[in-house]
Image 1 (cartoon, rainbow, N blue to C red):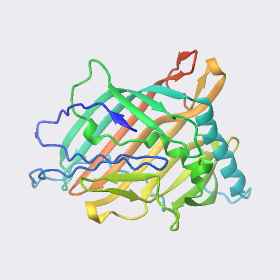
Image 2 (image 1 turned 180 degrees about the vertical axis):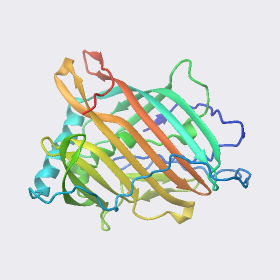
Image 3 (image 1 turned 120 degrees about the horizontal axis):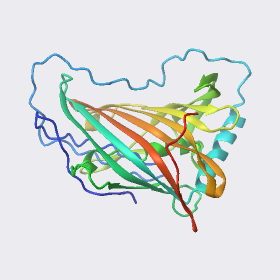
Image 4 (image 1 turned 90 degrees about the vertical axis):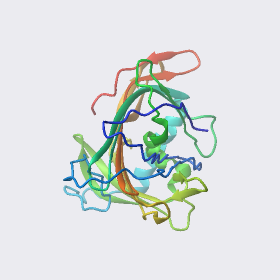
Length: 310
């Protein structure tokens, strides 16, 4: 079960209410998303469009600098990526981090309606071992932060998207290797994935007032050629969701190595995640930045500095 502490929202001088477009990502068979429709739209103003940092990934766009040599052995790449995903569950009972969250929203003309931010203590618990891994998230507003209701617009599960490559979930997707490239100075295989038509979508869900809608994803992952670690991942919706006015939802996640000396293990954990939400008459960007990781085990709790750049 995913829990979130209720907070309040601080809006800008336009004093508009949030659209409450909380697209809650869930991994591993639970659809716990929420999408609350706004009571009424913000008043339109005939104003020249302002620039929102709107640059969602387009996973079907052509990539430059892709090499077909050496040939990609997709089975080996997926085996390595699956091993890394299982290690994440095996080594980490749970971990904690500091999360800086920034939320931006514009109306249909591109006029800014809201910018707000907050800092959280972010806890991830992978729960008891099972055939299908489950991720539980808890966010606690840090003392001294604004007491604003950000819970209504939090997306969930973004950092865990790399666990799509867990062996229990790989078969949900059609996957192919597009070739070899370089990511952050490291050779990386680019793997394209798309929800299989004959499989129930289990990765992403949105909850409305009356139903839970499962949504299919497609995306790309940059997987380290030497280790099988997912270094970068991007997703788009396979189709729009007209029933709730969702035209698009794109996600970009970066991972970096974190060394936990107490267990002599290095894990690739989320460094940042950005969600671009095109919903109703609004566009929203939710940016998550993670730092100060702490690993919890039976006997130890160790504070780790922010992930190093790979």
